[in-house]
Image 1 (tube, rainbow, N blue to C red):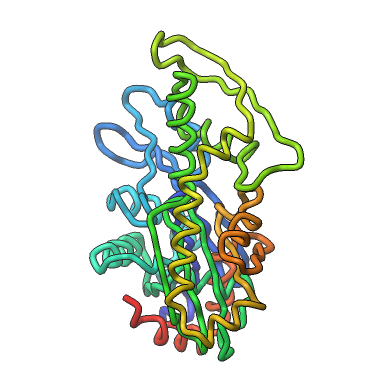
Image 2: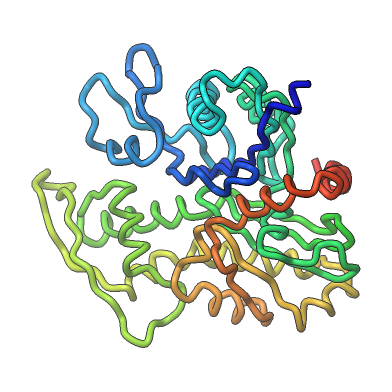
Length: 341
Protein backbone atom coordinates (compact mmCIF):
# COMPACT_ATOMS: atom_id res chain seq x y z
CA UNK A 1 0.00 0.00 0.00
CA UNK A 2 2.83 2.40 0.88
CA UNK A 3 4.41 1.66 -2.49
CA UNK A 4 1.40 3.21 -4.25
CA UNK A 5 1.95 6.57 -2.56
CA UNK A 6 5.75 6.71 -2.30
CA UNK A 7 8.17 8.17 -4.83
CA UNK A 8 11.39 6.80 -6.31
CA UNK A 9 14.57 8.80 -5.71
CA UNK A 10 18.07 8.30 -7.10
CA UNK A 11 20.95 9.88 -5.18
CA UNK A 12 24.51 10.48 -6.31
CA UNK A 13 26.01 11.01 -2.87
CA UNK A 14 29.40 12.40 -3.83
CA UNK A 15 32.26 13.82 -1.83
CA UNK A 16 32.03 17.15 -3.66
CA UNK A 17 28.42 17.26 -4.92
CA UNK A 18 25.08 15.60 -4.24
CA UNK A 19 22.58 15.13 -7.05
CA UNK A 20 19.02 13.94 -6.46
CA UNK A 21 16.84 12.49 -9.22
CA UNK A 22 13.10 12.02 -8.75
CA UNK A 23 11.29 9.61 -11.05
CA UNK A 24 9.25 11.43 -13.72
CA UNK A 25 10.63 14.81 -12.56
CA UNK A 26 14.32 14.61 -13.48
CA UNK A 27 17.29 15.88 -11.49
CA UNK A 28 15.75 18.27 -8.97
CA UNK A 29 18.71 18.89 -6.64
CA UNK A 30 22.29 19.60 -7.67
CA UNK A 31 24.16 20.95 -4.65
CA UNK A 32 27.65 20.82 -3.09
CA UNK A 33 28.00 18.17 -0.36
CA UNK A 34 28.51 20.81 2.32
CA UNK A 35 26.61 21.49 5.53
CA UNK A 36 26.78 24.47 7.88
CA UNK A 37 26.27 23.29 11.46
CA UNK A 38 25.92 24.86 14.88
CA UNK A 39 29.28 24.45 16.61
CA UNK A 40 27.62 23.58 19.94
CA UNK A 41 24.51 21.55 19.11
CA UNK A 42 25.81 20.13 15.75
CA UNK A 43 22.41 20.87 14.27
CA UNK A 44 22.51 21.52 10.52
CA UNK A 45 21.55 25.11 9.70
CA UNK A 46 21.97 25.03 5.92
CA UNK A 47 23.18 22.70 3.19
CA UNK A 48 24.40 22.91 -0.39
CA UNK A 49 25.58 26.09 -2.08
CA UNK A 50 24.45 28.29 0.79
CA UNK A 51 26.66 26.29 3.16
CA UNK A 52 29.56 26.13 0.68
CA UNK A 53 29.63 29.92 0.49
CA UNK A 54 30.31 29.88 4.23
CA UNK A 55 33.47 27.73 3.96
CA UNK A 56 36.30 29.60 5.68
CA UNK A 57 33.99 32.53 6.48
CA UNK A 58 31.78 31.33 9.33
CA UNK A 59 31.46 33.14 12.68
CA UNK A 60 32.53 31.44 15.91
CA UNK A 61 29.28 29.59 16.55
CA UNK A 62 28.97 28.13 13.05
CA UNK A 63 31.06 25.54 11.18
CA UNK A 64 30.88 24.69 7.47
CA UNK A 65 31.97 21.09 6.85
CA UNK A 66 31.94 18.41 4.17
CA UNK A 67 30.46 15.30 5.84
CA UNK A 68 31.81 12.93 3.19
CA UNK A 69 35.49 12.19 2.60
CA UNK A 70 37.06 9.98 -0.06
CA UNK A 71 33.62 8.96 -1.30
CA UNK A 72 32.37 7.70 2.06
CA UNK A 73 30.65 9.14 5.12
CA UNK A 74 33.04 10.71 7.61
CA UNK A 75 30.32 12.38 9.72
CA UNK A 76 27.31 10.08 10.06
CA UNK A 77 25.10 12.50 11.99
CA UNK A 78 25.55 15.44 9.61
CA UNK A 79 25.15 13.27 6.50
CA UNK A 80 21.89 11.94 7.90
CA UNK A 81 20.57 15.45 8.51
CA UNK A 82 21.64 16.54 5.04
CA UNK A 83 19.90 13.57 3.41
CA UNK A 84 16.78 14.17 5.49
CA UNK A 85 16.58 17.75 4.20
CA UNK A 86 16.94 16.65 0.60
CA UNK A 87 14.48 13.76 0.89
CA UNK A 88 11.93 15.94 2.65
CA UNK A 89 12.39 18.66 0.03
CA UNK A 90 11.56 16.35 -2.87
CA UNK A 91 8.90 14.19 -1.17
CA UNK A 92 7.13 16.79 0.96
CA UNK A 93 6.92 17.16 4.73
CA UNK A 94 3.64 15.32 5.09
CA UNK A 95 4.29 12.34 2.82
CA UNK A 96 3.69 9.37 5.14
CA UNK A 97 5.03 6.81 2.68
CA UNK A 98 8.81 7.09 2.67
CA UNK A 99 10.50 7.04 -0.74
CA UNK A 100 12.36 4.16 -2.34
CA UNK A 101 15.95 5.40 -2.60
CA UNK A 102 18.65 4.19 -4.98
CA UNK A 103 22.13 5.36 -3.92
CA UNK A 104 25.32 4.96 -5.95
CA UNK A 105 28.31 4.07 -3.75
CA UNK A 106 32.04 3.57 -4.50
CA UNK A 107 32.93 0.04 -5.57
CA UNK A 108 35.83 0.00 -3.10
CA UNK A 109 33.67 0.75 -0.07
CA UNK A 110 34.02 -1.44 3.03
CA UNK A 111 31.06 -3.31 4.61
CA UNK A 112 31.09 -0.88 7.54
CA UNK A 113 31.04 2.15 5.22
CA UNK A 114 28.30 0.53 3.13
CA UNK A 115 26.18 0.02 6.25
CA UNK A 116 26.73 3.66 7.26
CA UNK A 117 25.30 4.87 3.93
CA UNK A 118 22.33 2.50 4.24
CA UNK A 119 21.58 3.48 7.84
CA UNK A 120 21.84 7.20 7.01
CA UNK A 121 19.25 6.85 4.25
CA UNK A 122 16.84 4.83 6.41
CA UNK A 123 17.19 7.26 9.31
CA UNK A 124 16.58 10.14 6.88
CA UNK A 125 13.15 8.69 6.03
CA UNK A 126 13.66 6.20 3.21
CA UNK A 127 11.22 3.27 3.00
CA UNK A 128 13.55 1.11 0.91
CA UNK A 129 17.27 1.61 0.24
CA UNK A 130 19.04 0.09 -2.77
CA UNK A 131 22.80 0.42 -3.09
CA UNK A 132 24.55 0.08 -6.45
CA UNK A 133 28.24 0.42 -7.42
CA UNK A 134 28.93 3.91 -8.70
CA UNK A 135 30.93 2.98 -11.85
CA UNK A 136 28.18 0.63 -13.02
CA UNK A 137 25.50 3.29 -12.52
CA UNK A 138 27.71 5.83 -14.33
CA UNK A 139 28.15 3.40 -17.25
CA UNK A 140 24.38 3.06 -17.53
CA UNK A 141 24.07 6.84 -17.30
CA UNK A 142 26.40 7.53 -20.22
CA UNK A 143 24.55 4.98 -22.35
CA UNK A 144 27.05 2.13 -22.50
CA UNK A 145 25.52 -1.19 -23.69
CA UNK A 146 26.26 -3.03 -20.43
CA UNK A 147 24.11 -6.02 -21.46
CA UNK A 148 26.32 -6.92 -24.43
CA UNK A 149 29.02 -9.64 -24.33
CA UNK A 150 31.74 -7.06 -24.94
CA UNK A 151 33.96 -4.81 -22.84
CA UNK A 152 32.43 -1.54 -21.67
CA UNK A 153 34.94 0.46 -19.64
CA UNK A 154 34.16 3.50 -17.51
CA UNK A 155 36.48 5.79 -15.53
CA UNK A 156 34.61 7.97 -13.03
CA UNK A 157 36.77 10.69 -11.42
CA UNK A 158 34.90 12.20 -8.49
CA UNK A 159 35.85 14.53 -5.68
CA UNK A 160 37.16 11.84 -3.34
CA UNK A 161 37.57 8.69 -5.45
CA UNK A 162 38.41 7.51 -8.93
CA UNK A 163 36.45 4.44 -9.99
CA UNK A 164 37.29 2.13 -12.88
CA UNK A 165 35.11 -0.74 -14.08
CA UNK A 166 35.06 -3.08 -17.06
CA UNK A 167 31.51 -4.31 -17.59
CA UNK A 168 30.19 -7.15 -19.73
CA UNK A 169 26.92 -9.11 -19.78
CA UNK A 170 25.34 -6.92 -17.08
CA UNK A 171 28.10 -7.56 -14.57
CA UNK A 172 31.36 -6.00 -13.44
CA UNK A 173 34.27 -8.12 -14.69
CA UNK A 174 36.98 -5.89 -13.29
CA UNK A 175 36.94 -2.98 -10.86
CA UNK A 176 39.47 -0.68 -9.30
CA UNK A 177 38.95 2.17 -6.85
CA UNK A 178 41.43 4.59 -5.35
CA UNK A 179 40.73 7.43 -2.97
CA UNK A 180 42.20 10.03 -5.27
CA UNK A 181 40.19 12.63 -7.16
CA UNK A 182 39.33 16.29 -7.38
CA UNK A 183 40.08 16.95 -3.71
CA UNK A 184 43.67 15.75 -4.15
CA UNK A 185 44.03 18.05 -7.15
CA UNK A 186 42.88 20.99 -5.03
CA UNK A 187 45.29 20.02 -2.27
CA UNK A 188 48.14 19.83 -4.80
CA UNK A 189 47.38 23.40 -5.90
CA UNK A 190 47.29 24.61 -2.29
CA UNK A 191 50.66 22.99 -1.55
CA UNK A 192 52.26 24.35 -4.71
CA UNK A 193 51.28 27.96 -3.99
CA UNK A 194 52.41 27.63 -0.39
CA UNK A 195 55.83 26.27 -1.38
CA UNK A 196 56.44 28.45 -4.43
CA UNK A 197 54.96 31.76 -3.27
CA UNK A 198 54.40 31.38 0.51
CA UNK A 199 50.74 32.02 -0.33
CA UNK A 200 48.06 30.34 1.74
CA UNK A 201 44.70 29.75 0.03
CA UNK A 202 41.61 27.73 0.92
CA UNK A 203 39.95 24.80 -0.90
CA UNK A 204 37.40 27.06 -2.61
CA UNK A 205 40.12 29.20 -4.20
CA UNK A 206 42.08 26.09 -5.21
CA UNK A 207 39.00 24.65 -6.89
CA UNK A 208 38.44 27.93 -8.76
CA UNK A 209 42.04 27.85 -10.01
CA UNK A 210 41.60 24.24 -11.17
CA UNK A 211 38.41 25.10 -13.05
CA UNK A 212 39.68 28.31 -14.65
CA UNK A 213 43.24 27.43 -15.69
CA UNK A 214 43.84 23.79 -14.66
CA UNK A 215 44.84 21.32 -17.38
CA UNK A 216 46.29 17.85 -17.83
CA UNK A 217 47.75 18.42 -21.28
CA UNK A 218 49.61 21.32 -22.92
CA UNK A 219 47.23 24.04 -24.11
CA UNK A 220 47.45 25.81 -27.46
CA UNK A 221 47.50 29.05 -25.50
CA UNK A 222 48.56 28.91 -21.87
CA UNK A 223 46.35 30.76 -19.39
CA UNK A 224 47.08 33.04 -16.45
CA UNK A 225 45.11 34.00 -13.37
CA UNK A 226 45.47 36.40 -10.46
CA UNK A 227 45.19 34.65 -7.10
CA UNK A 228 44.58 36.34 -3.76
CA UNK A 229 45.36 34.81 -0.41
CA UNK A 230 47.39 35.26 2.74
CA UNK A 231 51.16 35.44 2.95
CA UNK A 232 52.02 32.44 5.15
CA UNK A 233 55.13 34.21 6.49
CA UNK A 234 54.00 37.81 7.03
CA UNK A 235 50.33 36.94 7.62
CA UNK A 236 49.19 39.77 5.34
CA UNK A 237 46.93 39.70 2.26
CA UNK A 238 48.86 38.94 -0.92
CA UNK A 239 48.18 38.64 -4.65
CA UNK A 240 50.17 36.70 -7.26
CA UNK A 241 49.76 35.63 -10.90
CA UNK A 242 49.94 31.93 -11.75
CA UNK A 243 50.02 30.18 -15.13
CA UNK A 244 48.24 27.08 -16.38
CA UNK A 245 51.64 25.49 -17.02
CA UNK A 246 52.72 25.55 -13.37
CA UNK A 247 49.29 24.41 -12.19
CA UNK A 248 49.53 21.50 -14.64
CA UNK A 249 52.90 20.54 -13.16
CA UNK A 250 51.38 20.67 -9.66
CA UNK A 251 48.53 18.38 -10.74
CA UNK A 252 50.77 15.88 -12.52
CA UNK A 253 51.49 13.54 -9.53
CA UNK A 254 47.74 13.07 -8.99
CA UNK A 255 47.14 12.55 -12.71
CA UNK A 256 49.95 9.99 -12.89
CA UNK A 257 48.39 8.09 -10.01
CA UNK A 258 45.08 7.90 -11.88
CA UNK A 259 46.83 6.91 -15.11
CA UNK A 260 48.86 4.20 -13.35
CA UNK A 261 45.71 2.70 -11.86
CA UNK A 262 44.06 2.51 -15.28
CA UNK A 263 47.16 0.87 -16.78
CA UNK A 264 47.29 -1.72 -13.97
CA UNK A 265 43.60 -2.49 -14.49
CA UNK A 266 44.17 -2.99 -18.22
CA UNK A 267 47.11 -5.32 -17.53
CA UNK A 268 44.87 -7.80 -15.69
CA UNK A 269 41.87 -7.44 -17.97
CA UNK A 270 40.91 -10.73 -19.72
CA UNK A 271 42.44 -10.86 -23.24
CA UNK A 272 39.11 -11.11 -25.07
CA UNK A 273 37.84 -7.98 -23.36
CA UNK A 274 41.17 -6.17 -23.87
CA UNK A 275 40.82 -6.69 -27.60
CA UNK A 276 37.39 -5.01 -27.48
CA UNK A 277 38.87 -1.96 -25.78
CA UNK A 278 41.41 -1.38 -28.56
CA UNK A 279 38.61 -0.05 -30.76
CA UNK A 280 35.98 0.91 -28.18
CA UNK A 281 38.27 2.70 -25.71
CA UNK A 282 36.67 3.92 -22.52
CA UNK A 283 34.28 6.62 -21.31
CA UNK A 284 35.06 9.22 -18.66
CA UNK A 285 32.54 10.61 -16.17
CA UNK A 286 32.58 12.61 -12.96
CA UNK A 287 33.68 16.17 -12.26
CA UNK A 288 37.35 15.27 -12.82
CA UNK A 289 36.56 14.52 -16.47
CA UNK A 290 36.01 18.27 -16.98
CA UNK A 291 39.70 19.06 -16.42
CA UNK A 292 41.10 20.41 -19.68
CA UNK A 293 43.02 17.85 -21.69
CA UNK A 294 42.56 14.94 -19.30
CA UNK A 295 41.12 12.82 -22.11
CA UNK A 296 44.23 13.47 -24.25
CA UNK A 297 46.52 12.75 -21.30
CA UNK A 298 44.87 9.42 -20.45
CA UNK A 299 44.67 8.44 -24.13
CA UNK A 300 48.43 8.93 -24.44
CA UNK A 301 49.02 7.09 -21.14
CA UNK A 302 46.91 4.04 -22.05
CA UNK A 303 47.06 4.03 -25.84
CA UNK A 304 43.27 3.77 -26.00
CA UNK A 305 40.58 6.10 -27.37
CA UNK A 306 39.03 8.18 -24.59
CA UNK A 307 35.51 9.58 -24.82
CA UNK A 308 33.95 12.15 -22.50
CA UNK A 309 30.38 11.73 -21.29
CA UNK A 310 28.03 14.37 -22.63
CA UNK A 311 27.37 15.59 -19.08
CA UNK A 312 30.07 14.06 -16.83
CA UNK A 313 28.72 15.58 -13.61
CA UNK A 314 25.26 14.07 -14.15
CA UNK A 315 26.33 10.61 -15.37
CA UNK A 316 25.60 8.80 -12.10
CA UNK A 317 22.32 10.64 -11.48
CA UNK A 318 21.25 9.87 -15.06
CA UNK A 319 22.13 6.23 -14.41
CA UNK A 320 19.81 6.11 -11.40
CA UNK A 321 17.08 7.54 -13.62
CA UNK A 322 17.48 4.75 -16.18
CA UNK A 323 17.47 2.07 -13.49
CA UNK A 324 14.46 3.41 -11.60
CA UNK A 325 12.44 3.50 -14.84
CA UNK A 326 13.05 -0.22 -15.44
CA UNK A 327 12.48 -2.27 -12.22
CA UNK A 328 13.29 -5.60 -13.93
CA UNK A 329 16.69 -4.42 -15.10
CA UNK A 330 17.36 -2.79 -11.74
CA UNK A 331 16.75 -6.14 -10.03
CA UNK A 332 18.97 -7.97 -12.55
CA UNK A 333 21.81 -5.47 -12.31
CA UNK A 334 21.58 -5.42 -8.54
CA UNK A 335 21.94 -9.21 -8.41
CA UNK A 336 24.81 -9.19 -10.91
CA UNK A 337 26.79 -6.51 -9.08
CA UNK A 338 26.04 -7.51 -5.48
CA UNK A 339 28.94 -9.99 -5.40
CA UNK A 340 31.60 -7.28 -5.83
CA UNK A 341 31.05 -6.23 -2.20
